[in-house]
Length: 65
Image 1 (cartoon, rainbow, N blue to C red):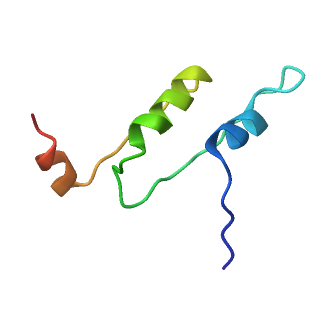
Image 2 (cartoon, helix red, strand yellow):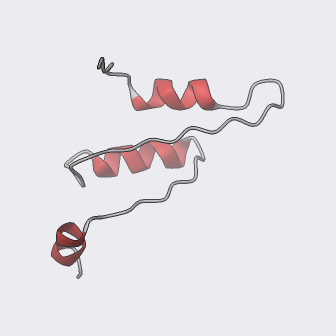
């Protein structure tokens, strides 16, 4: 299996509608939330990309406050 690193902003730009076509992209970030989570949210907000975040139980409990 091969993985490629790609800047989030570049990936979002490739998913923006081109010529009126709807495009969808699904991203997963494993082992998070990480220190860069707020940066990821900033990029998504700037690009007006809706996001749904899911947290595993132990992270949700740690962030309950």
